[in-house]
Length: 345
Image (cartoon, rainbow, N blue to C red):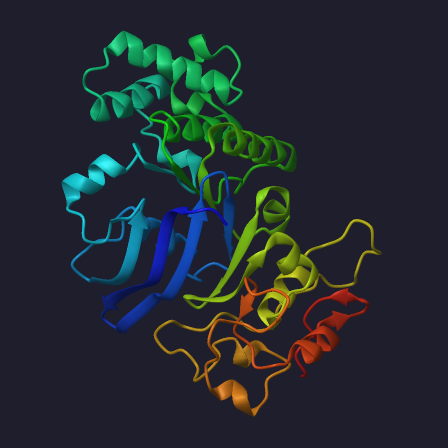
């Protein structure tokens, strides 16, 4: 991989609550290079969004405990002051938030909100020039008749159009890094495909370092170069798209892949699922946090394995599982497909 634009090392984010300390992110490390799409996947509550929001300082609060390192082109962001971070947000790192329905202020026109962001970072830009730039951005993300639609309110846009407008706002200042948090949630499959095609095109044309947060592996398959799988605040597997989809090494990843419905297979009597529920971050099980849900648990699983390369031919492919590669390839086959066996009753 080329020199990374963004480098995250041993990131730990905890929140002090009345019930105790919630360790939402625990020792996460990854790099993102220009022109690369890195997908972070996992169930709700696995720490994906907290990781992304911490990169741009959105989790700072009196009850937050943040450790580790986040470097953008070598400059440390975790130690940066609020004024420094304010200059970074939008200008160097932009974020497309999860819900386009609530991310816009409903009482301001869409174009005015984009103009405000441009002029907040670049006060030398006149209002007319910023408005022209906003119209160009809306047009570039596929909003028809952008010159007219710039004066519409958010409620006058459909869900897909609002998501496109959010992406346009994020790109207004030509950032180096784009964080897209569940950019296709609540969109129908046709609009979802259009948004993914848009993200893929923008990534290639602008050379963005893109972090895509999602729980939908179908979305990952469309756009990602590398995949990070998170569970209970930790990375449990990471590798290239092909490594994760065709040679997954962690049982949790098998469960995610096995939960995908296939249109080229007979309709099952029951949709495949991972048994049980994610653990409480206030009371994690000893050892591997996936152990209570894993049908392949054995004695050594009471110790937490390191995130290591366990395949000599793929040093970038790392996972946290004590099973040998041979055992994994044998046990992940369920009805001829990659999946996780149903837990014994």
